[in-house]
Length: 101
Image (cartoon, rainbow, N blue to C red; front, side, top):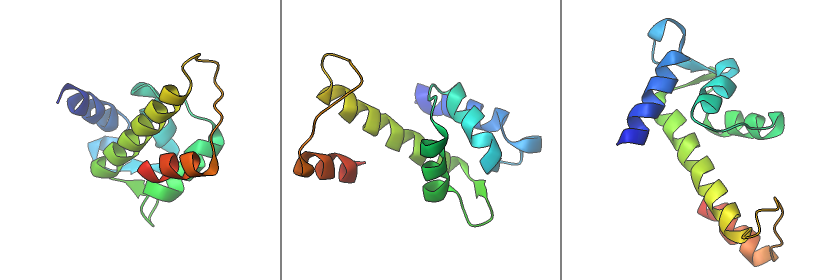
């Protein structure tokens, strides 16, 4: 519950005029506030996956994106015990990991 409240605060601080709607161009800053520094390519994928057709994101969508990122990072970290930023996966392992998210 603490994380959810923290995410809600970050979401609200990046919505224009506290409308409850986050614009695509503000997503990077909101995610950075909750601890995710992402490349432009990864951010673009998140926008394609979670943004609505009108280019907005609701709080539930924001939480879904955060949970997806959390699981993805957790899977990667479990496969990278030396923390060197690189993992080697078979096709089956990669598919399982990517579909788990």
